[in-house]
Figure (cartoon, rainbow, N blue to C red):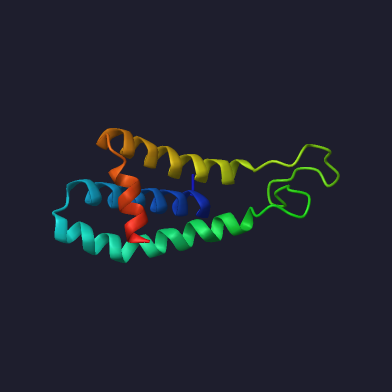
Length: 112
């Protein structure tokens, strides 16, 4: 059975992300810094592009995820927005809790 284009893209993307995670966890500091400088802007751009596609309309609904034209559901963030928010904030909170002193948040503030 031939492999679909989507499954090839999906596999390639997941392999790339796995490689990044492995390198970030196991690389020496110099390699990790180089990796962050090269990959972090690309990751942020990719996430922003994805979230732009899910930007709520004037009624507070995601035009990409909306299933019906005249849905009466209350305005709320779509799953893509919620997933991104939860992944980023839960990870940050876990890092802060692990450090015990909020140093991860201070580091993010000082870097920005």
